[in-house]
Length: 133
Image (cartoon, rainbow, N blue to C red):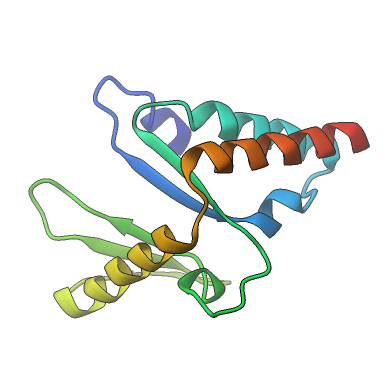
């Protein structure tokens, strides 16, 4: 259902930062992961979707090392942060909390590959999965 939201006539914008290791783990098997990577690559061509990969091998700590988060921004409401934990999830409200995650997004933007290089890496990982399937 989340995927379908991105295809509506007036879809939201999505920027996804994905760590490289997540692209290389054959969760569900190599064939399944290959299909998933091909789907991500196709979605990355949509005008409202931006996919950026964060290469492994970082020499400095950055927000992707801490864990996933979703920063929701709305045209007529204050932003909200959603965190998923192992057995629960939380929403964070308030300027101070949201500002920290907005800064985290900026830091990720600075360490991630651009869209074209990200797409190339995703395709290369998909090809690796397909070869192993």
